[in-house]
Length: 330
Ligand code: LMR
View 1 (cartoon, rainbow, N blue to C red):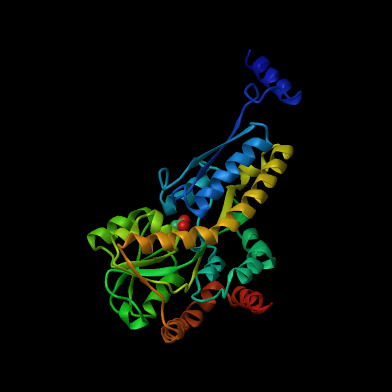
View 2 (view 1 turned 135 degrees about the horizontal axis):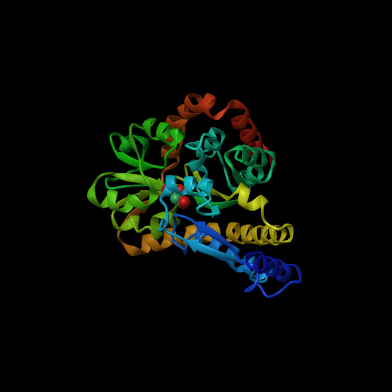
């Protein structure tokens, strides 16, 4: 009987029977931001395209805002196959043991998005994805969020204002070194816990993109923000490699097409989403947002320069040089 049912399902699949009869492939896509962020919107677009291009053979279930897993757990869940797709920030790959990814956390490494794109779309981006494969992970795309700003509950305008401030960071040795370089006390914390930590004074401030600060409502529990644009947050869209390699080839091709289109979309809206979020926070009247003077920016750059030497051997000179070469090309 079992064998008959299996045979019937296979036959139906082979002759292109309705998707409802053949077994549907489910992709669980977990992430930590809200649906109205560059990542959340990219995920929704991927779902729509993937389901359309595969004629419903694939169903994508999105679990936003850390509702399934927090930062670290998410990566473990993917490796175990409990979820199939994630888009963790690039900072989350250092703790996985792929330290070369920490190059993205270096302060002031990307002068603009074009330079960043040359890195992610070029040799460096490919080489980094290759390093994920022995971990059972396949990298599909790089999605932007944007450049980071600082927030705190005391006035911040220049590096010395951060002396002694407890600043939340993602779990990255480079980000730790960056804040120590300006005298702050970095505190590693999961993204979903930051709002409460700010509200209760467990941390004094943080760095993040305007879109993350806005959608997580950090601006309600922080008094000041400084538009430093000192670093970058972007994502690697990744899948469980065994799951991906085991997909029927035609389905995988359609999913690759959906991912390519979703990537173009996600990267086309990231800047405006961040610009709008910054504006909305300014308009809220709840947080005072300022821009550093050229002198203050120069002082931040100078103070943080030490991170390159401190973290050089950890990240790997080859990777840093390859990135710097791309950022200097025109
Ligand atoms: C953070 O943990 O601050 C962010 O990287 C979260 C995200 O995914 O944007």
